[in-house]
Amino acid sequence: MSLESTHPDYDAMGDDYRLMRDTSAGQRAIKQASYLYLPPTAAMVLDGALSSVEPGASAFTAYLSRAVFPEHVDEAMRTMVGILNREPPDIAVPSQLEDMLLNATRQNETIEQLIRKIHTAQLLYGRIGLLLDVDSSDTPHIVTYSAESMINWDDQRAYEQGRNELSFIVTSEDAWMRGVEGSSMFDWSVRTRYRAMFLNDDGLYTTFTEQEGQTSPEVVPTFAGRALDFVPFTFIGANDLVATPGPVPLLGIANSALAIYRGEADFRQTLHMLGQDTLVMTGVAPGSELDEDEPTRIGSGAKIELPEGGDAKFIGIDSAGLPEQRRALEGDYQRSIAMGSRLLENTSSQAESGEALRVRVAAKTTTLHTVALTAAAGLENCLRQAALWVGANPDDVRVTPNTDFIEDAASPEQALKLMEARNSGLPISLRSIHDWASKNEFTQKTWDEELDLITEDSEFLEAINGGSPSKAAASEIAATPDPSAVEESPDSTPEEA
Image (cartoon, rainbow, N blue to C red; front, side, top):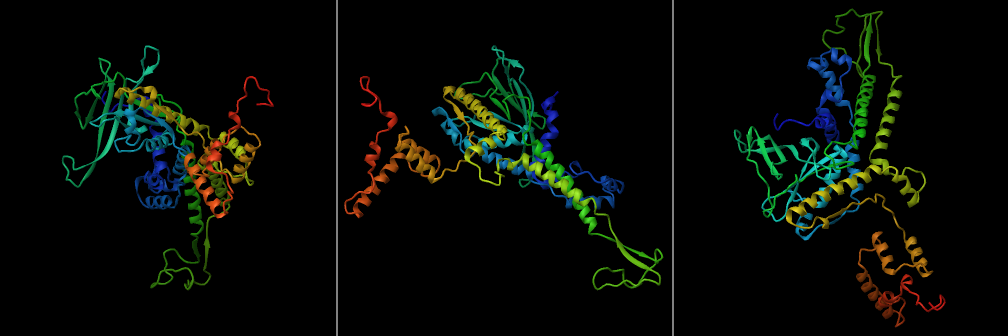
C-alpha cells in the first residue's frame, strides 16, 4: 500500500472522467485519442491499421480526418453555467473573512469566480473538492481539487451523533514545473505530488506530501495558534456533499456526441467514396500500357485510346443507404441538443407568456436547481470551517444561490398597469414599485437618487412652463401615504377610517 493507492469507487469512475475530460476539450482531444473513440473499419484492420501498417494506417488517418465531432458538451456546460450565474449568489460572512470574498483562492479568484468553477466541475464531472488551507496571510484560502485528483478517502469514522465524518483523503497534484533537477531553466516537465490529509492519534488535522519518493514531515496546520479537530475538506457533487462519487449530469450528452462522431465518420466516408468512382477498362490486357510515354488521364481535356473492341467506364458504390445515414445523424443531433444547451430555448412558434415559459422550463431545470443548491451548501460548509478556524461565528456565514433561471422581460405597459392598480387602491408603496422597476432594469438609480432627479425635473418644467408645475415634486411623492399603512383607530367606523 502507498499514497498512489486508489479508492474502489474512484477506479469505477475513471473511464467516465476521461470521457468527460476529452469530450469537453473538443475535437482535437477526441482525435488525439484515435482508436479509443473511433474504431477503424474491418477492412482497415485487415490492412494493418491497428499495427500502423500500410495501407490500413493511411486509410484510417483519412477516415479520422474526415470525421466531425460536435462540441455539444462544452456548449451545454457554458450555457448552463451562464444560467446558474445569471444573478450572483447572496453571500454573507463575518468580518474576519471579508477578504476571502475578493481573494478566495491561491490564484486570487473572487468568490463568484470560484462558484463558476464549482458549477463547471459539477456539470462535467459531478464532483469537485474544496480544501481550506492557511499560509502567512490574514485569512485562509480555498484550494480546489478536480474529480480525477481525489484518488482515495475514508469517511467511515462516525461522529458521536452517529454521522459519518471524513478522516482521511489523498489527492494527486500534477503540475508543470520549470527548471527542475536534471533539466535546464528553460525546460518544463510534469511532476506528481501526493498529499495526505487525515486525523492523527490526537484527533488533530494533519498533512504531509510525497513527491518522487521523498516524503515531507507531518504537519499540523494552525491559524493564530488554532488547530482543527476535523479535516477541512468538502466534497461537492451534483446532488449532495458525500464523498462517494455521484452521477455526472452531462455524461449523456457526451455519449450522444460520441455517437454522432462515429456516425459522421461513416457518413463522410460514404460521401468520399461516392465521389471517387473507379475507372474500369475492358479489352485491355492486364499490365499493358496504353501509352508508353504518358500515364492514363481522366477528366476534361484528357483522352484514353483503347484497342478495337475495348471499353472504359466508371463504377461506384450504391448510394441507397446514404439517406438513412443522414436521417440517423439528424436524429442523433436532435437528441443531443434536447439534452443540452437548448433545453431552455423557446421553440414554440408562438410567443409564450412569462408564466407559461416558467412552467415549461421548471420541469427541465430540476438538475440545475439541485446543482445550484448543492454548490451553495458546499461553499457555505467550507466558509463555516474557515470561520471556526479564524475564531469567528460560523452561524454568520450564509450562501444563498440564484435559483431563478428565467429572465422575465417586463414591459412599460406592465409598469403603467402597476401604477394604475396602485391608484385604484392596490396596497403597494411607491418604494416597492421602484424596487420592481430596478429589478427589471427600468432604472439603475436608488430611491433617493430618483427623488433628487424628480425634484430637478419638476423645477425645470415649472420654470419653462412659466410657474405652472406640470409634475408633482419629489417631496409630494415621498409624502404620499401608502394605503397599506393606513390604520383604523379602535373607536372609528370603517367609513371614518
